[in-house]
Length: 246
Image (tube, rainbow, N blue to C red):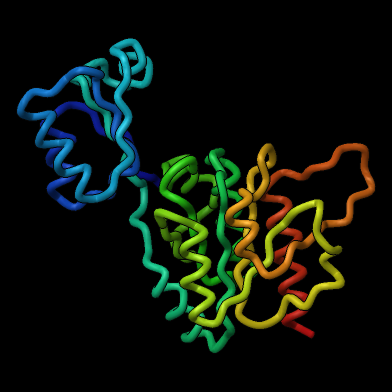
């Protein structure tokens, strides 16, 4: 299966991508460049809350694939993002309580791809990622997901903590993975649930963790104190699967 490229370079190409409704995750613009075309691009970017980064020419040259960036490079999603309502609709269609995975600061595309793949197999109804400090739906993510990206909705939100509060009002309760928590086998993980996973380095952010109802610890017997984020997500997801089956 082929996946579309997600790098768009050149002023006209980037502007047309915005105007055609293409989902642009990040925009890199030459620092100090404020002419007419660039201002038009910035206006379009702000409409979609695209992350805008001003960089030196050396940085643009480094990430350019064509060498003809004209002072602007955009990273577009290889796949369109879903809405959270799509996840609730999928759960209702399957006659199951919602099971949604929220990712905090996952920046490795291989991790995100693996998480999407496992989420699909574990029966999760969707994945929510933040707009900042997180990888988007790049071609690498799509390839690593082994096709699961076609079946598992992924939504992007501005603020995870706020989203958790909104989802609580819709009946979900939340558990996050952290070594300071209670062993996962002792927790009741049935019902409408949101599973929050953080990065290996920083874990789940403080504000997000405070919004969670429970904190789950994965028992580990080795000499290091952390797991790969996608592995941790898989272990906790299948504990949720096990409890739902029982």
